[in-house]
Amino acid sequence: MRQALLVLVLFVPAVGSAGGAQRRPPASAPARPDVFLGYSNTKAGDASLHGLGLSGSYPLGAALSLVVDVSGHDGSFAGADLGQLALLAGARWSPSSGRLRPFAEGLLGGVRTSVSVDVGGATISDADSDWGLALGGGLDYGLDARWALRALVHVRLVHGEGAWDTDPRLAVGAVFRLGR
Amino acid sequence: MKRRMLVSWATVVVAAVVAAGCGSESPTGSSGAGGVAVQGVVLGGNASVSAADTQTSASSAKKVTVKVEGTSLTVDVSASGTFQFTGIPSGTFTLIFLADGVEIGRVVVAAEDGFEVKIVVQVTGSTLVLVEIKVEDPDETEDDDAESSSCVVNGGKTGAGIELEGQVASGSSGSFNLTATGRSSVPVVVDGSHATFRCNGSPKNTSDAQCKASVKTGARVHVRGTLTSCTEAKVTAIEVKVQKSEDDDDDD
Image (cartoon, rainbow over all chains, first blue to last red; front, side):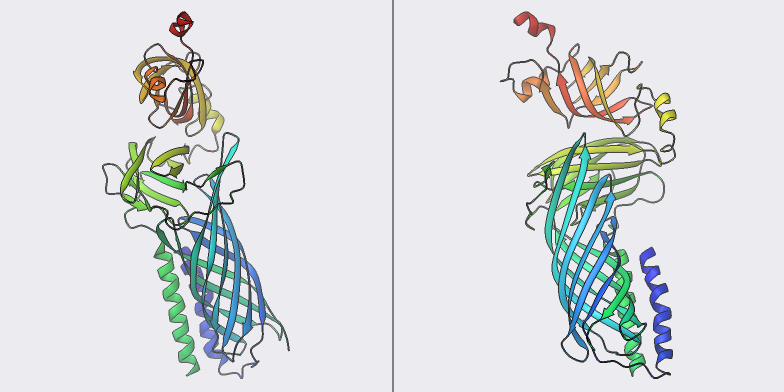
C-alpha cells in the first residue's frame, strides 16, 4: 500500500501539470525509438524485491509502439534469497507527443523466479519459469530532445505453482530517445 | 479533449495501483495485531542441493495452502512460493500444509508473542520436508550473547541451529525427552515428527521403522535441529542419529 501512495505522490502532481502544460505550446516531437534504464521494485508474492529495469520501444505509428521489457530483481524473505527475471514484450500507446508523455502498455512474456536457502553449509535452490502478463502505464517528462525521465507502474500477473500472483511493479529512471 | 484523456489515463493507472496493492495479500492470513508472525517459503520438488538449478517445473504443480490448526487462518502459497501469517496466537501452534486440498505435512512451532518465525519447506510429490526454521525475537536480535547465556540449553539461541547428544529419558521417536548432560540442566523436549532417523553402527539393512523404534528410554542419540524455545528447552529435530547401543555390542 505504501507503494501505491508513492505512485500517487509521483503521478498526481504530474497529471496536474500536464493540464498546465496544455496552456503552453508543447514541444511536440514525432514518435521515436527509445531505451529506458532505471531502478525497479516489485513484489513476488509476499516478498519485496529490488532491481533494475531495461526496456526499449520502437514506434509502429503515431501513438503505438512495440515494447520489449527486461527486469531483474532480488531480495530475501523468510531467510531465503529470491530472484526474479522477467522478459516481456507487447504494445505501448502514447497519446501525447509533448514534454509530458503519458503512456499505457500491455506486455506478455516469461518470468523466472529462483529461490535459494543456505542450510548447514549446503545451498538448496529451486527455480520456476512461469507465464507473466503486465498491464500498466507511466509518464515521461522530457528534459531535452534526447533525454527524459520516466516513472512507470505495472500490475504483473504471474501464474505458477497452481496460483496466480498479482504483483505491483514500480520503476523510475532515464529514457534516451534514438533517431532524429 | 486532451485533458480528459490524461485524466482518464491517470484514473486507470491509480485504479491499477490500488488493485495491485491489495493483490497478493490473503484476507485470511491475519487475525489482527500482535501475536506471532510467520514468513515462509515453499520450495518445489525440483529443488537441487548445492548446484545451479537448470530444471523448470511446469504449471501443473500443485496448489499449496497453509493453515494454522485450530484457527481460521489460511493462506495460499504464492506463485513465487512465499506465504505469510500475522497475528497467530502465541504458544505452540501447528502449521498444516495442503497440496490441492490434501494434507501433506505438519510443522509444530512454539513461539511467544511478538516473535517472528521464518520457515522454509520443500514439497516433493505428496510429502513435506522441513528445510529450515528460525524463531526470532525482534527485541533480542542485537543481544545474542546475553540470550545465549540466559538460555536453558548452554550455548543455545532461540531459532538457531543446535546439535545435542545424550540419552533418551522418555518418549519415542515422534517426541522424546533428552538428557543432554553438560548442555542442559533440564530434559530437552525433542520434536522428532519431521526428522530423518539414522541408526549409527547398526546393520545397513535396518529399516526406517526399526530405526525409529530403537528410540526409546536409555537410547543414546545425536540430535540436529533448531532450538525453538530457550526457556522451555524445545528442539525441532531435522536429523536424529541413534548411536550403537550396548545391546548391539552384546549381539556382536
